Length: 259
Length: 149
Image 1 (cartoon, each protein chain N blue to C red):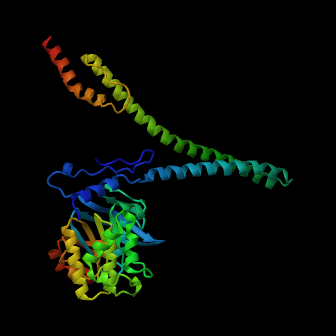
Image 2: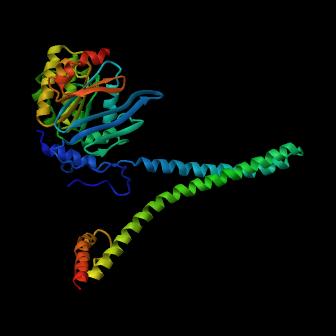
Image 3: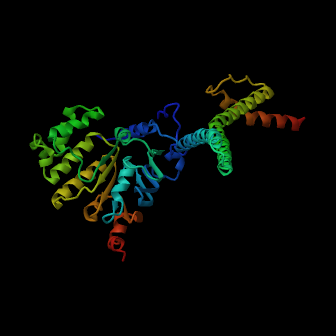
C-alpha cells in the first residue's frame, strides 16, 4: 500500500497519482515526466517548454549539441535546479521543489557530468560514502568490485588520480550502490576512450535489462543509440525530434546542423 | 538485484514525500503584502500629523494632508488584501465541510426514506459510501412502488 503524504502538508494540485490501469489500452507507465519545463540561470533562459517522458523500464537517450540544455534538464529532473515553470512528475507525483536529497534517498540517482567523485578520497572511501542509503559497506564494496574489477586494484588510490574511465566506473559504482529505480546519466562518454565507452554502455544495457529506468544525456549519439529504447534530440533548449533510435539516426546530422 | 519490488518501493517513497503546494506560497506572499501595506500606511498617516504641524507653509501642510490620505488608503488596501487571503484558506475548508455535511445529510434522508439503518456519524466510517450505493436502489424502488400504486 502506498502511504499518503504527511498530514498538515498541502499536496500540490495535480499530485494525484496516475493509475496505469485506468489509462487503459496497455498505456505505458512513465516513471519520469517533464512537462513544459522552462528553466534558466538568473535572467538567461535555457529551457523553453521541454516535454520528455521516461517510461518504466526503458532507456531514453537525450541527444544534442553543446549548449542545448541537456544537463540543465537533468538537473531539473534530479531536483538540483528549480524550473521557472512546468512540472517534474516522478512516479506519477509532481515533485517540484522537493529537495534533491529526498529524491535521491527515494531512488532517483544522478551521475553528473564530470563524475562527481570526491577527488581527495580513496576509492574505498568514495564507496563508503554510499552507505548512507542503509546498506552495509561490505555489500557496497563487493558489488562495486564485482562489476568493476579494476576498482579493486585501485581501492587505496585517491579518486583524483584515477584515469577518466576509472573515475566513471567509480561514479557508476557509487550510483548503483543506492539501488536506483530511476538513473540519470550525464555525458557518460565525456573524455573517455571508445573502448571504455563501449564497456560502460554495455553495463548500462545490463542495468536496463534488470529493470532500472534510465535517462542518458549524450553529445555523441553513436554508442548510446545502440542501447536506447527511445531517443530525443534537443536543440537550443527545445526538444526538436523524438522517436526510436533507428528513426532518429537518419535525422541526426540534420537536427544538429539545421539542414 | 533489481526487481519490480524496487520500482514499487520507489513509487511508495515518492508518494510519501512532502510536496509544497505552490498556491499556499502565493497566499502567504499576499498575506505578507497586506500586513506590510497596513503597517506602512498607518505609519505614514501618523507621521503626516507632526509633519503638518511642523510647518506654517500651507503648501507643505497640504502635502501632509495628501500624505495622510495616501497612508490611510494604503492601510485600507492592505486590510482588504489581508482579509481576502486570510479568509481564502478558511473558506476553502468551510466549503469542503459544507460539501461533506450535505452529503451526510442526504445519506440520512435516504436512509430514513428507505428504512435502512442510519450511518454512524463522523468521517471515515464508510457508511456514507454504503448509503450512497443504496440511493439508486432506494429511489428506483420508490418510483416503482408509486407507479404500481
